[in-house]
Length: 172
Image (cartoon, rainbow, N blue to C red):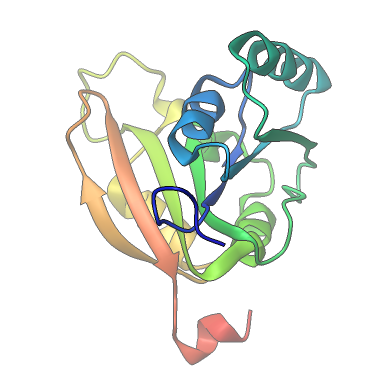
């Protein structure tokens, strides 16, 4: 079904949405025909996110209480999933990536933002930073392929992945 602008509705997800800073902005971008699934592990964060959405009059965000090994996103329905400075917090990153991969449509994208480990001037604890090489190695091991690295932000890498199309990835 096409929207008024002739574009198909977009469905996106944010894992580790917190109070909704990114999710609510994405909800405005995808418009009323689109949908945002906002995932977090903490019910209190999701309560705040729902309050923030209500205050802003945003109705196209659905909150999801995720697990440490499962983002609990709907299978095969998302065009894009974004991780903003949360991947390094995952206690079971392989299982989370598998769940994210399962939630993405065949042409879906995973966008990962992480603080630059390569830059000692970034005032963030080392445990909260990742290098491009580290991120690429870990994420590609779970059936993704790094397609683009954007370095336009002052402190973070933006890494854009697609689902890998190799036979090994298809077997996952």
